[in-house]
Length: 565
Image (cartoon, rainbow, N blue to C red; front, side, top):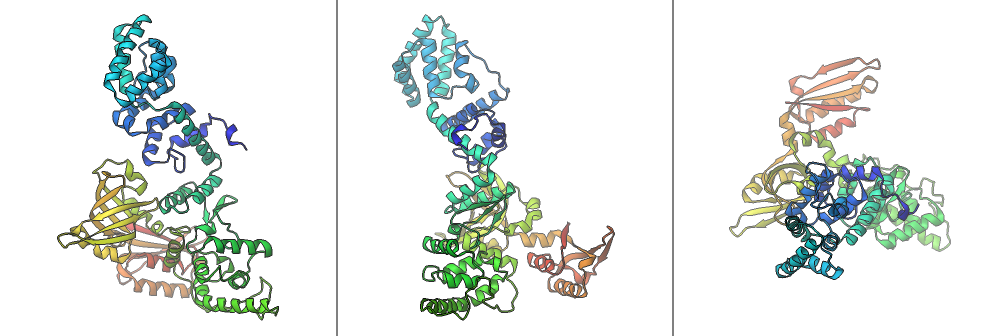
Protein backbone atom coordinates (compact mmCIF):
# COMPACT_ATOMS: atom_id res chain seq x y z
CA UNK A 1 0.00 0.00 0.00
CA UNK A 2 1.36 3.39 -1.03
CA UNK A 3 -0.56 6.45 0.14
CA UNK A 4 0.87 8.48 -2.75
CA UNK A 5 -0.74 6.13 -5.27
CA UNK A 6 -4.35 6.21 -4.01
CA UNK A 7 -6.97 7.41 -6.53
CA UNK A 8 -8.08 11.01 -6.05
CA UNK A 9 -11.60 10.34 -7.33
CA UNK A 10 -12.88 7.81 -4.77
CA UNK A 11 -16.66 8.25 -4.50
CA UNK A 12 -16.82 6.61 -1.08
CA UNK A 13 -14.42 9.22 0.30
CA UNK A 14 -16.49 12.12 -1.04
CA UNK A 15 -19.72 10.51 0.16
CA UNK A 16 -18.26 10.06 3.65
CA UNK A 17 -17.11 13.68 3.80
CA UNK A 18 -20.43 14.92 2.46
CA UNK A 19 -22.24 13.07 5.25
CA UNK A 20 -20.22 15.01 7.83
CA UNK A 21 -17.79 12.24 8.82
CA UNK A 22 -14.91 14.66 9.37
CA UNK A 23 -13.58 13.85 12.86
CA UNK A 24 -9.84 13.30 12.68
CA UNK A 25 -9.58 14.60 9.11
CA UNK A 26 -6.72 17.06 8.61
CA UNK A 27 -7.95 20.66 8.15
CA UNK A 28 -11.60 19.50 7.97
CA UNK A 29 -12.25 18.48 11.58
CA UNK A 30 -14.05 21.51 13.04
CA UNK A 31 -17.80 21.61 13.61
CA UNK A 32 -18.10 24.58 11.25
CA UNK A 33 -16.27 22.65 8.54
CA UNK A 34 -18.60 19.70 9.10
CA UNK A 35 -21.55 22.02 8.50
CA UNK A 36 -19.92 23.29 5.29
CA UNK A 37 -19.10 19.75 4.12
CA UNK A 38 -22.72 18.65 4.49
CA UNK A 39 -23.89 21.71 2.55
CA UNK A 40 -21.29 21.52 -0.20
CA UNK A 41 -21.18 17.70 -0.55
CA UNK A 42 -17.82 17.59 -2.38
CA UNK A 43 -17.68 15.35 -5.44
CA UNK A 44 -14.13 15.88 -6.62
CA UNK A 45 -10.66 16.68 -5.36
CA UNK A 46 -10.97 20.20 -6.74
CA UNK A 47 -13.93 20.72 -4.39
CA UNK A 48 -11.68 19.81 -1.45
CA UNK A 49 -9.04 22.30 -2.60
CA UNK A 50 -11.67 25.04 -2.79
CA UNK A 51 -13.13 24.01 0.57
CA UNK A 52 -9.79 24.50 2.33
CA UNK A 53 -9.38 27.91 0.70
CA UNK A 54 -12.92 29.05 1.51
CA UNK A 55 -13.09 28.08 5.18
CA UNK A 56 -11.60 31.29 6.53
CA UNK A 57 -13.19 34.28 8.29
CA UNK A 58 -13.11 36.58 5.23
CA UNK A 59 -14.94 34.32 2.76
CA UNK A 60 -17.34 33.08 5.45
CA UNK A 61 -18.31 36.60 6.57
CA UNK A 62 -18.60 37.98 3.04
CA UNK A 63 -21.23 35.50 1.85
CA UNK A 64 -18.75 34.16 -0.68
CA UNK A 65 -19.02 30.60 0.69
CA UNK A 66 -22.81 30.54 0.43
CA UNK A 67 -22.53 31.81 -3.14
CA UNK A 68 -20.06 29.03 -3.96
CA UNK A 69 -22.36 26.33 -2.50
CA UNK A 70 -25.43 27.67 -4.33
CA UNK A 71 -23.59 27.73 -7.65
CA UNK A 72 -22.27 24.21 -7.19
CA UNK A 73 -25.78 22.85 -6.63
CA UNK A 74 -27.35 24.85 -9.45
CA UNK A 75 -29.35 27.17 -7.21
CA UNK A 76 -27.61 30.18 -8.76
CA UNK A 77 -26.82 30.21 -12.47
CA UNK A 78 -23.15 30.29 -13.43
CA UNK A 79 -22.40 32.88 -16.10
CA UNK A 80 -19.24 34.45 -17.45
CA UNK A 81 -18.88 38.01 -18.77
CA UNK A 82 -16.47 36.77 -21.44
CA UNK A 83 -15.73 33.21 -22.66
CA UNK A 84 -12.12 33.39 -21.47
CA UNK A 85 -13.29 33.44 -17.83
CA UNK A 86 -14.80 29.96 -18.09
CA UNK A 87 -11.42 28.34 -18.51
CA UNK A 88 -10.14 30.20 -15.46
CA UNK A 89 -13.13 29.89 -13.09
CA UNK A 90 -14.97 26.70 -14.10
CA UNK A 91 -13.31 24.63 -11.33
CA UNK A 92 -14.73 27.04 -8.75
CA UNK A 93 -18.18 27.51 -10.34
CA UNK A 94 -17.47 31.04 -11.50
CA UNK A 95 -16.31 32.26 -8.07
CA UNK A 96 -12.83 33.74 -7.65
CA UNK A 97 -11.35 31.62 -4.85
CA UNK A 98 -7.60 31.65 -5.45
CA UNK A 99 -5.02 34.40 -5.77
CA UNK A 100 -3.73 32.69 -8.91
CA UNK A 101 -7.14 33.21 -10.55
CA UNK A 102 -6.90 36.98 -10.04
CA UNK A 103 -3.49 36.97 -11.68
CA UNK A 104 -4.68 34.71 -14.50
CA UNK A 105 -7.66 36.99 -15.26
CA UNK A 106 -5.43 40.06 -15.36
CA UNK A 107 -2.96 38.27 -17.61
CA UNK A 108 -5.52 36.76 -20.01
CA UNK A 109 -7.99 39.62 -20.30
CA UNK A 110 -5.73 42.67 -19.86
CA UNK A 111 -2.35 41.30 -20.99
CA UNK A 112 -0.74 42.02 -17.59
CA UNK A 113 2.82 40.88 -17.08
CA UNK A 114 3.39 38.44 -14.22
CA UNK A 115 4.84 41.30 -12.15
CA UNK A 116 1.84 43.58 -12.78
CA UNK A 117 -0.59 40.74 -12.09
CA UNK A 118 1.15 40.03 -8.79
CA UNK A 119 1.04 43.73 -7.88
CA UNK A 120 -2.72 43.71 -8.50
CA UNK A 121 -3.12 40.60 -6.36
CA UNK A 122 -1.19 42.19 -3.51
CA UNK A 123 -3.13 45.45 -3.70
CA UNK A 124 -6.44 43.58 -3.47
CA UNK A 125 -5.28 41.33 -0.64
CA UNK A 126 -3.99 44.30 1.38
CA UNK A 127 -6.90 46.59 0.38
CA UNK A 128 -4.39 49.14 -0.90
CA UNK A 129 -6.92 51.38 -2.65
CA UNK A 130 -4.34 53.77 -4.07
CA UNK A 131 -2.45 50.94 -5.78
CA UNK A 132 -5.72 49.32 -6.87
CA UNK A 133 -6.73 52.52 -8.70
CA UNK A 134 -3.44 52.46 -10.61
CA UNK A 135 -3.89 48.80 -11.50
CA UNK A 136 -7.53 49.39 -12.42
CA UNK A 137 -6.52 51.94 -15.06
CA UNK A 138 -3.99 49.47 -16.50
CA UNK A 139 -6.65 46.75 -16.46
CA UNK A 140 -9.12 48.88 -18.45
CA UNK A 141 -6.43 49.83 -20.94
CA UNK A 142 -5.54 46.18 -21.45
CA UNK A 143 -9.12 44.95 -21.78
CA UNK A 144 -9.85 47.73 -24.29
CA UNK A 145 -6.96 46.54 -26.45
CA UNK A 146 -8.35 43.00 -26.22
CA UNK A 147 -11.76 44.26 -27.41
CA UNK A 148 -13.62 43.76 -24.14
CA UNK A 149 -16.31 46.40 -23.60
CA UNK A 150 -15.80 48.92 -20.76
CA UNK A 151 -19.07 47.79 -19.15
CA UNK A 152 -17.95 44.15 -19.00
CA UNK A 153 -14.46 45.13 -17.90
CA UNK A 154 -15.97 47.15 -15.04
CA UNK A 155 -18.10 44.19 -13.88
CA UNK A 156 -15.14 41.81 -14.09
CA UNK A 157 -12.93 44.14 -12.06
CA UNK A 158 -15.68 44.57 -9.44
CA UNK A 159 -15.87 40.78 -9.17
CA UNK A 160 -12.11 40.63 -8.77
CA UNK A 161 -12.29 43.28 -6.02
CA UNK A 162 -15.15 41.53 -4.20
CA UNK A 163 -13.72 38.02 -4.17
CA UNK A 164 -10.05 38.68 -4.85
CA UNK A 165 -9.44 40.34 -1.48
CA UNK A 166 -10.15 36.96 0.16
CA UNK A 167 -8.23 34.89 -2.37
CA UNK A 168 -6.06 32.10 -0.98
CA UNK A 169 -2.90 30.67 -2.49
CA UNK A 170 -4.04 27.64 -4.51
CA UNK A 171 -0.77 25.73 -4.16
CA UNK A 172 -1.03 25.96 -0.37
CA UNK A 173 -4.68 24.94 -0.47
CA UNK A 174 -3.91 21.99 -2.75
CA UNK A 175 -1.17 20.76 -0.41
CA UNK A 176 -3.53 20.91 2.59
CA UNK A 177 -6.32 19.33 0.54
CA UNK A 178 -4.12 16.40 -0.45
CA UNK A 179 -3.37 15.55 3.18
CA UNK A 180 -7.04 16.05 4.04
CA UNK A 181 -8.08 13.68 1.24
CA UNK A 182 -5.45 11.11 2.23
CA UNK A 183 -6.64 11.05 5.86
CA UNK A 184 -10.27 10.84 4.67
CA UNK A 185 -9.29 7.93 2.39
CA UNK A 186 -7.66 6.09 5.30
CA UNK A 187 -10.65 6.67 7.55
CA UNK A 188 -13.06 5.50 4.84
CA UNK A 189 -11.21 2.33 3.83
CA UNK A 190 -9.22 1.51 6.98
CA UNK A 191 -11.43 2.92 9.76
CA UNK A 192 -10.18 0.66 12.57
CA UNK A 193 -6.50 1.26 11.86
CA UNK A 194 -7.14 4.97 11.35
CA UNK A 195 -9.04 5.41 14.61
CA UNK A 196 -6.39 3.42 16.54
CA UNK A 197 -3.67 5.74 15.21
CA UNK A 198 -5.82 8.80 15.92
CA UNK A 199 -6.44 7.75 19.53
CA UNK A 200 -2.72 7.14 20.02
CA UNK A 201 -1.81 10.57 18.64
CA UNK A 202 -4.29 12.43 20.88
CA UNK A 203 -3.99 10.37 24.06
CA UNK A 204 -3.14 13.47 26.15
CA UNK A 205 -6.13 15.46 24.87
CA UNK A 206 -9.14 14.37 26.96
CA UNK A 207 -11.67 16.43 24.99
CA UNK A 208 -10.61 14.93 21.67
CA UNK A 209 -10.39 11.44 23.15
CA UNK A 210 -14.02 11.62 24.28
CA UNK A 211 -15.08 12.68 20.79
CA UNK A 212 -12.96 10.02 19.08
CA UNK A 213 -14.26 7.26 21.33
CA UNK A 214 -17.81 8.44 20.56
CA UNK A 215 -16.86 8.33 16.87
CA UNK A 216 -15.68 4.72 17.27
CA UNK A 217 -19.03 3.95 18.87
CA UNK A 218 -20.84 5.55 15.92
CA UNK A 219 -18.67 3.54 13.50
CA UNK A 220 -19.47 0.31 15.44
CA UNK A 221 -15.80 -0.16 16.35
CA UNK A 222 -15.56 -1.73 19.83
CA UNK A 223 -12.79 -0.43 22.09
CA UNK A 224 -11.39 -3.09 24.41
CA UNK A 225 -10.07 -2.09 27.85
CA UNK A 226 -6.37 -2.32 28.76
CA UNK A 227 -5.04 -5.83 29.40
CA UNK A 228 -1.50 -6.58 30.60
CA UNK A 229 -1.42 -9.64 28.33
CA UNK A 230 -2.93 -8.07 25.21
CA UNK A 231 -2.12 -4.36 25.30
CA UNK A 232 0.94 -2.73 23.80
CA UNK A 233 2.18 0.75 24.57
CA UNK A 234 -0.20 2.42 22.09
CA UNK A 235 -3.67 1.63 20.80
CA UNK A 236 -3.59 -1.43 18.56
CA UNK A 237 -5.93 -3.22 16.16
CA UNK A 238 -7.23 -6.61 17.25
CA UNK A 239 -9.40 -8.07 14.49
CA UNK A 240 -12.25 -5.61 14.06
CA UNK A 241 -11.66 -4.03 17.46
CA UNK A 242 -9.23 -1.54 19.03
CA UNK A 243 -7.30 -2.48 22.15
CA UNK A 244 -6.48 0.26 24.64
CA UNK A 245 -2.78 1.01 25.05
CA UNK A 246 -1.01 0.98 28.41
CA UNK A 247 0.34 4.50 27.83
CA UNK A 248 -3.21 5.82 28.13
CA UNK A 249 -3.59 4.55 31.72
CA UNK A 250 -2.93 7.19 34.37
CA UNK A 251 0.00 6.53 36.74
CA UNK A 252 1.51 3.99 34.31
CA UNK A 253 4.73 5.59 33.08
CA UNK A 254 7.16 4.69 30.33
CA UNK A 255 9.52 2.81 32.67
CA UNK A 256 6.69 0.60 33.95
CA UNK A 257 5.40 -0.06 30.43
CA UNK A 258 8.87 -1.06 29.25
CA UNK A 259 9.24 -3.54 32.13
CA UNK A 260 5.80 -5.09 31.53
CA UNK A 261 6.21 -5.47 27.76
CA UNK A 262 9.76 -6.83 28.00
CA UNK A 263 8.82 -9.43 30.63
CA UNK A 264 5.83 -10.57 28.59
CA UNK A 265 7.89 -10.80 25.41
CA UNK A 266 10.73 -12.75 27.05
CA UNK A 267 8.80 -15.10 29.35
CA UNK A 268 5.25 -15.19 28.04
CA UNK A 269 1.83 -14.20 29.25
CA UNK A 270 1.01 -13.44 32.86
CA UNK A 271 -1.11 -16.09 34.54
CA UNK A 272 -2.58 -14.02 37.35
CA UNK A 273 -2.14 -10.89 39.42
CA UNK A 274 0.40 -12.64 41.64
CA UNK A 275 2.31 -14.06 38.67
CA UNK A 276 2.54 -10.51 37.34
CA UNK A 277 3.77 -9.08 40.65
CA UNK A 278 6.45 -11.71 41.18
CA UNK A 279 7.83 -11.35 37.64
CA UNK A 280 8.04 -7.58 37.15
CA UNK A 281 10.45 -5.14 38.78
CA UNK A 282 8.29 -3.78 41.60
CA UNK A 283 10.56 -0.77 41.98
CA UNK A 284 9.38 0.45 38.56
CA UNK A 285 5.96 -1.20 38.53
CA UNK A 286 4.89 -0.05 41.98
CA UNK A 287 1.67 -0.32 43.95
CA UNK A 288 0.21 2.81 42.39
CA UNK A 289 0.79 1.44 38.88
CA UNK A 290 -0.74 -1.94 39.70
CA UNK A 291 -3.76 -0.37 41.40
CA UNK A 292 -4.48 1.71 38.29
CA UNK A 293 -4.14 -1.38 36.11
CA UNK A 294 -6.60 -3.29 38.30
CA UNK A 295 -9.12 -0.44 38.32
CA UNK A 296 -9.13 -0.04 34.54
CA UNK A 297 -9.63 -3.79 33.99
CA UNK A 298 -6.13 -4.81 32.89
CA UNK A 299 -6.28 -7.94 35.12
CA UNK A 300 -9.85 -8.99 34.36
CA UNK A 301 -8.47 -12.02 32.47
CA UNK A 302 -7.73 -13.60 35.88
CA UNK A 303 -11.50 -13.89 36.52
CA UNK A 304 -11.11 -12.41 39.99
CA UNK A 305 -13.27 -9.43 40.84
CA UNK A 306 -11.56 -6.05 40.88
CA UNK A 307 -12.88 -5.64 44.42
CA UNK A 308 -11.07 -8.85 45.45
CA UNK A 309 -7.80 -7.91 43.78
CA UNK A 310 -7.74 -4.46 45.39
CA UNK A 311 -8.56 -5.99 48.78
CA UNK A 312 -5.48 -8.26 48.76
CA UNK A 313 -3.12 -6.18 46.62
CA UNK A 314 -0.90 -5.12 49.53
CA UNK A 315 -0.52 -8.72 50.67
CA UNK A 316 0.22 -9.96 47.14
CA UNK A 317 2.90 -7.32 46.62
CA UNK A 318 4.56 -8.22 49.94
CA UNK A 319 4.58 -11.93 49.05
CA UNK A 320 5.86 -11.19 45.55
CA UNK A 321 8.70 -9.10 46.98
CA UNK A 322 9.59 -11.95 49.32
CA UNK A 323 9.49 -14.38 46.43
CA UNK A 324 11.80 -12.13 44.39
CA UNK A 325 14.28 -11.92 47.26
CA UNK A 326 14.32 -15.70 47.58
CA UNK A 327 14.70 -16.10 43.84
CA UNK A 328 17.59 -13.67 43.85
CA UNK A 329 19.18 -15.86 46.51
CA UNK A 330 18.63 -18.86 44.19
CA UNK A 331 16.08 -20.38 46.57
CA UNK A 332 12.86 -22.01 45.44
CA UNK A 333 9.83 -19.87 46.08
CA UNK A 334 7.12 -21.40 48.24
CA UNK A 335 4.65 -20.06 45.68
CA UNK A 336 6.05 -22.14 42.82
CA UNK A 337 7.07 -21.02 39.36
CA UNK A 338 4.22 -21.98 37.07
CA UNK A 339 2.31 -18.95 35.76
CA UNK A 340 -0.84 -21.03 35.47
CA UNK A 341 -0.64 -22.34 39.03
CA UNK A 342 -3.18 -21.05 41.55
CA UNK A 343 -0.99 -18.68 43.49
CA UNK A 344 -3.39 -16.51 45.46
CA UNK A 345 -6.71 -16.78 47.19
CA UNK A 346 -9.24 -14.01 47.39
CA UNK A 347 -11.80 -13.09 50.04
CA UNK A 348 -15.39 -14.05 49.30
CA UNK A 349 -16.82 -10.69 48.29
CA UNK A 350 -19.05 -9.28 45.58
CA UNK A 351 -17.75 -7.19 42.72
CA UNK A 352 -18.14 -3.43 42.90
CA UNK A 353 -21.43 -2.18 41.43
CA UNK A 354 -21.29 -1.23 37.77
CA UNK A 355 -21.51 2.46 38.66
CA UNK A 356 -18.27 2.16 40.67
CA UNK A 357 -16.49 0.18 37.94
CA UNK A 358 -17.16 2.83 35.33
CA UNK A 359 -16.02 5.52 37.77
CA UNK A 360 -12.75 3.57 38.12
CA UNK A 361 -12.43 3.75 34.32
CA UNK A 362 -12.92 7.49 34.41
CA UNK A 363 -10.38 7.81 37.24
CA UNK A 364 -7.65 5.76 35.57
CA UNK A 365 -8.21 6.53 31.90
CA UNK A 366 -9.93 9.90 31.94
CA UNK A 367 -13.11 8.79 30.16
CA UNK A 368 -15.48 5.85 29.88
CA UNK A 369 -14.80 2.81 27.68
CA UNK A 370 -16.96 -0.18 28.53
CA UNK A 371 -20.11 1.80 29.25
CA UNK A 372 -20.92 5.48 29.55
CA UNK A 373 -23.09 6.40 32.56
CA UNK A 374 -25.40 8.33 30.23
CA UNK A 375 -26.16 5.20 28.19
CA UNK A 376 -28.73 4.31 30.86
CA UNK A 377 -30.50 7.62 30.17
CA UNK A 378 -30.94 7.48 26.40
CA UNK A 379 -34.74 7.63 26.60
CA UNK A 380 -34.62 10.64 28.92
CA UNK A 381 -32.04 12.40 26.75
CA UNK A 382 -34.22 11.92 23.67
CA UNK A 383 -37.23 13.32 25.52
CA UNK A 384 -35.69 16.40 27.11
CA UNK A 385 -32.40 17.25 25.42
CA UNK A 386 -32.33 19.13 22.13
CA UNK A 387 -28.59 19.14 21.41
CA UNK A 388 -25.33 17.38 22.21
CA UNK A 389 -21.99 19.11 22.72
CA UNK A 390 -20.78 18.39 19.17
CA UNK A 391 -23.69 20.38 17.68
CA UNK A 392 -23.38 23.50 19.84
CA UNK A 393 -20.74 25.42 17.79
CA UNK A 394 -23.00 25.34 14.72
CA UNK A 395 -25.97 26.98 16.47
CA UNK A 396 -26.68 30.73 16.47
CA UNK A 397 -25.19 32.76 19.29
CA UNK A 398 -27.81 33.54 21.94
CA UNK A 399 -30.06 30.58 21.11
CA UNK A 400 -31.76 28.79 24.00
CA UNK A 401 -30.51 25.20 24.31
CA UNK A 402 -31.28 22.14 26.41
CA UNK A 403 -28.51 19.61 26.96
CA UNK A 404 -27.98 16.59 29.22
CA UNK A 405 -24.71 15.50 30.79
CA UNK A 406 -22.59 14.73 33.82
CA UNK A 407 -20.61 17.18 35.91
CA UNK A 408 -16.92 16.46 35.24
CA UNK A 409 -15.60 19.44 37.23
CA UNK A 410 -17.04 22.27 39.31
CA UNK A 411 -15.47 25.55 40.42
CA UNK A 412 -17.27 27.81 42.88
CA UNK A 413 -16.43 31.50 43.29
CA UNK A 414 -17.73 34.45 45.31
CA UNK A 415 -18.85 37.55 43.41
CA UNK A 416 -18.00 41.12 44.43
CA UNK A 417 -21.44 41.30 46.05
CA UNK A 418 -20.65 38.25 48.17
CA UNK A 419 -22.90 35.85 46.24
CA UNK A 420 -21.77 32.36 45.28
CA UNK A 421 -21.77 31.28 41.65
CA UNK A 422 -20.05 28.47 39.75
CA UNK A 423 -18.50 27.27 36.53
CA UNK A 424 -18.86 23.60 35.66
CA UNK A 425 -17.78 21.35 32.83
CA UNK A 426 -20.69 19.27 31.59
CA UNK A 427 -19.76 16.05 29.80
CA UNK A 428 -22.00 14.11 27.44
CA UNK A 429 -21.15 11.21 25.13
CA UNK A 430 -19.71 13.58 22.50
CA UNK A 431 -17.53 15.94 24.54
CA UNK A 432 -17.57 18.79 27.07
CA UNK A 433 -19.10 22.24 27.41
CA UNK A 434 -18.61 24.93 30.07
CA UNK A 435 -21.75 25.92 32.00
CA UNK A 436 -21.94 29.26 33.82
CA UNK A 437 -24.20 29.24 36.89
CA UNK A 438 -24.97 32.75 38.08
CA UNK A 439 -25.90 33.17 41.79
CA UNK A 440 -29.67 32.69 41.55
CA UNK A 441 -29.42 29.61 39.31
CA UNK A 442 -26.52 28.18 41.33
CA UNK A 443 -28.53 28.44 44.55
CA UNK A 444 -31.48 26.52 43.11
CA UNK A 445 -29.21 23.98 41.36
CA UNK A 446 -26.99 23.17 44.36
CA UNK A 447 -28.98 20.06 45.46
CA UNK A 448 -28.70 18.61 41.92
CA UNK A 449 -24.98 19.33 41.77
CA UNK A 450 -24.34 17.62 45.10
CA UNK A 451 -26.35 14.52 44.12
CA UNK A 452 -23.98 13.47 41.36
CA UNK A 453 -27.00 12.81 39.12
CA UNK A 454 -26.92 13.41 35.37
CA UNK A 455 -28.34 16.85 34.67
CA UNK A 456 -30.62 18.59 32.21
CA UNK A 457 -29.33 22.13 31.67
CA UNK A 458 -31.41 24.80 30.00
CA UNK A 459 -29.57 27.98 29.07
CA UNK A 460 -28.42 30.55 26.54
CA UNK A 461 -25.62 29.64 24.15
CA UNK A 462 -22.65 32.01 24.31
CA UNK A 463 -20.32 31.95 21.29
CA UNK A 464 -18.90 35.43 21.85
CA UNK A 465 -15.45 34.05 22.68
CA UNK A 466 -13.45 31.23 21.15
CA UNK A 467 -14.83 28.74 23.69
CA UNK A 468 -18.44 27.53 23.58
CA UNK A 469 -20.32 28.28 26.81
CA UNK A 470 -23.87 28.03 28.13
CA UNK A 471 -25.30 30.54 30.60
CA UNK A 472 -27.65 28.33 32.59
CA UNK A 473 -31.21 29.44 33.35
CA UNK A 474 -32.37 26.14 34.87
CA UNK A 475 -30.74 22.91 36.08
CA UNK A 476 -32.70 19.70 36.76
CA UNK A 477 -31.74 16.18 37.85
CA UNK A 478 -32.53 13.56 35.19
CA UNK A 479 -33.35 11.08 37.94
CA UNK A 480 -35.94 13.44 39.43
CA UNK A 481 -37.39 14.13 36.00
CA UNK A 482 -37.66 10.43 35.28
CA UNK A 483 -39.26 9.66 38.65
CA UNK A 484 -41.93 12.28 38.04
CA UNK A 485 -42.53 11.42 34.37
CA UNK A 486 -42.47 7.59 34.30
CA UNK A 487 -45.91 6.12 34.86
CA UNK A 488 -45.08 2.41 34.90
CA UNK A 489 -42.10 0.07 34.92
CA UNK A 490 -42.21 -3.18 32.92
CA UNK A 491 -39.90 -6.11 33.67
CA UNK A 492 -39.90 -8.92 31.10
CA UNK A 493 -38.14 -12.21 31.92
CA UNK A 494 -38.19 -15.71 30.37
CA UNK A 495 -40.01 -18.36 32.39
CA UNK A 496 -36.83 -20.45 32.42
CA UNK A 497 -35.01 -17.86 34.57
CA UNK A 498 -37.82 -17.60 37.13
CA UNK A 499 -36.89 -18.87 40.61
CA UNK A 500 -38.45 -18.55 44.05
CA UNK A 501 -35.30 -16.85 45.32
CA UNK A 502 -35.40 -14.40 42.44
CA UNK A 503 -39.02 -13.47 43.14
CA UNK A 504 -38.33 -12.96 46.85
CA UNK A 505 -35.37 -10.71 46.05
CA UNK A 506 -37.47 -8.84 43.46
CA UNK A 507 -40.07 -8.09 46.14
CA UNK A 508 -37.38 -6.93 48.58
CA UNK A 509 -35.74 -4.74 45.92
CA UNK A 510 -39.05 -3.09 45.02
CA UNK A 511 -39.85 -2.37 48.67
CA UNK A 512 -36.37 -0.89 49.14
CA UNK A 513 -36.94 1.59 46.28
CA UNK A 514 -40.44 2.91 46.90
CA UNK A 515 -41.81 5.56 44.58
CA UNK A 516 -44.79 6.48 42.40
CA UNK A 517 -44.23 4.16 39.44
CA UNK A 518 -46.40 1.05 38.94
CA UNK A 519 -44.69 -2.30 38.32
CA UNK A 520 -45.66 -4.95 35.75
CA UNK A 521 -43.95 -8.34 35.49
CA UNK A 522 -44.04 -10.01 32.06
CA UNK A 523 -43.22 -13.74 32.02
CA UNK A 524 -42.60 -15.17 28.55
CA UNK A 525 -42.81 -18.82 27.51
CA UNK A 526 -40.87 -20.53 24.76
CA UNK A 527 -43.94 -20.63 22.50
CA UNK A 528 -44.27 -16.84 22.51
CA UNK A 529 -47.06 -16.61 25.07
CA UNK A 530 -46.80 -14.00 27.80
CA UNK A 531 -48.25 -13.71 31.28
CA UNK A 532 -48.51 -10.22 32.77
CA UNK A 533 -48.65 -9.67 36.53
CA UNK A 534 -49.68 -6.22 37.78
CA UNK A 535 -48.27 -5.38 41.21
CA UNK A 536 -50.50 -3.61 43.74
CA UNK A 537 -49.99 0.04 44.72
CA UNK A 538 -47.91 -0.85 47.78
CA UNK A 539 -45.22 -2.04 45.37
CA UNK A 540 -44.82 1.22 43.43
CA UNK A 541 -41.15 2.07 42.81
CA UNK A 542 -38.68 4.82 42.02
CA UNK A 543 -37.01 3.46 38.82
CA UNK A 544 -33.56 4.84 39.67
CA UNK A 545 -30.35 3.54 38.05
CA UNK A 546 -29.49 1.74 41.32
CA UNK A 547 -32.87 -0.03 41.23
CA UNK A 548 -32.42 -1.02 37.58
CA UNK A 549 -28.87 -2.23 38.18
CA UNK A 550 -30.06 -4.44 41.04
CA UNK A 551 -32.94 -5.88 38.99
CA UNK A 552 -30.55 -6.91 36.21
CA UNK A 553 -28.62 -9.11 38.66
CA UNK A 554 -31.70 -11.09 39.74
CA UNK A 555 -32.67 -12.76 36.46
CA UNK A 556 -31.15 -14.03 33.23
CA UNK A 557 -31.65 -11.73 30.22
CA UNK A 558 -34.22 -9.35 31.76
CA UNK A 559 -35.80 -6.61 29.64
CA UNK A 560 -36.55 -3.29 31.37
CA UNK A 561 -38.86 -0.72 29.78
CA UNK A 562 -40.77 2.37 30.91
CA UNK A 563 -44.16 3.78 30.07
CA UNK A 564 -44.06 7.55 30.18
CA UNK A 565 -46.85 9.74 31.49
